Amino acid sequence: MNFEERKREILKLTEAHSSVSVAMLAKNLHTSAITIRRDLAVLAGNGLLYRTHGGAMKVNEAVATAGYIDKSIINAQAKDVICKKAATFIKDGDIIFMDCGSTVSRLCAYIKYRKIRVVTNSLPVVYELMNSSVQLTVTGGQVDKERRAIHGVMALEQIARYKCDKAFIGVDGISLAKGLSAKTEKEAGVTKAIASGAGEVFLLCDSGKLEKDQYFQFGSLNMINYLVTDGNADKKLLQRYTKRGIHVIV
Image 1 (cartoon, rainbow, N blue to C red):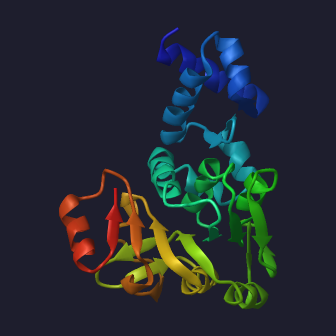
Image 2: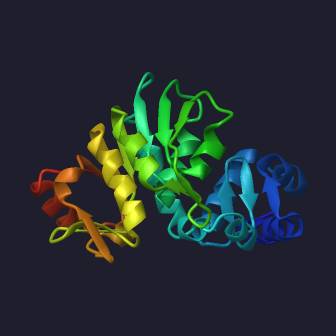
């Protein structure tokens, strides 16, 4: 069975069951789990389904389940590559912050079995890590059901009490001229608080957000130490970020 045939069967099974596992697909398509994982990565990268840990779910089901997911399926393949690379900077024993960015949440798949502590305001991160080896600390505050995150004064106060080794954050836009920007002030506030309490700050950002300014500018480039992006980024542009003192990781 070639890829196009497998693609049709995978989408048909995902549509019928809403969500499917790698094991189920491998059995039904008479192929290996490795092949299925590769196929799912391609289909997720094209926005045809949403990749979950251990399987996939249809996009409209995912969006109904969590409003933030429609952002995470955009450039999904690039985001997974970014997160896989970012995970290599995490050591056992680390205490890390993870914000509610759609790219950051995809880091979970690569840290489930690490002996680390994660502090987060992201409900999807909690869901993905609560049965893993990771020790979890969840901020208090008001639940934002659209973003599946915890925001508000209490969240900011609690985050300010923690000092972590590394912070992994996302943004809606970054530019050399105006720095970091977001589409909402509440997300920007949490991200800024997380960054200020970390020894090192890693911005996980697909190339589509480079040199894009959004509604609310909330931080200078000095806020981040590392920019982790994908191979589609313009090399000359990345050199300009490097000259500003940022460690660029592609």
